[in-house]
Image (tube, rainbow, N blue to C red; front, side, top):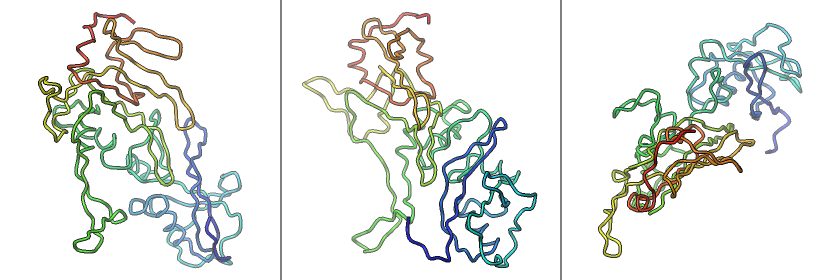
Length: 318
């Protein structure tokens, strides 16, 4: 930690919320604040910490608490008080920051806000950057079903042009200054075996989480033609093959950042059926159960190669 002057006190803020009558705590948020301050300045500093340009002091209230986080009384620190705190902030002072009722609904689904409550039964957080699962799930065009996130939407967002933020400004050698340039991810060509990695882990400066958004992906005929720049080339005198793929396997992760369990789904080259692999246990499964919120890595083989050895599957009973 950087050295600070004696007039500055290090303040810990721990985001907390209640679920089923049990208090849960997130990672501590550490920041330095001058000892000589006013309640108004403290509110503004905490608002910037919780979500700069997204959270304002009207959205929460501060109470003085004991060492266990329990408010000592019902008194709320006045956010409008601009008078300096008498003798400055006391050492080992404990403060509780609580969202006001109307703000709880407003911050749900808002990226970049620390310590926000999660609705009952909902796990995970929205991705913080364009192209994430949450921004795609909110869309309902091109005939997509309500509330369903499709792999096609992820690919479209992956290849969407975006403008760099001022913090990531690019230095232009022509005009000799930093500019907010645009960037775009595109594919030049595709391989015979394609591995797609779904972003299941979200990281920010203060917050980490496991994303469990279900993504619907095709088991057959995944067409990447709209996203590939190079025209298909012939190989060894054989006709050029379009970038169309069939799924042959999926790696699943269940759990959280602290620990979890891996399973797999695979399509057999013997009978064309899908099977679930869980440690030493193997069992047949229906294709409809392959795509889930646990899917982590998707393994595709170009269609002309996949159909050369994958037999047509028969109906299977789990």
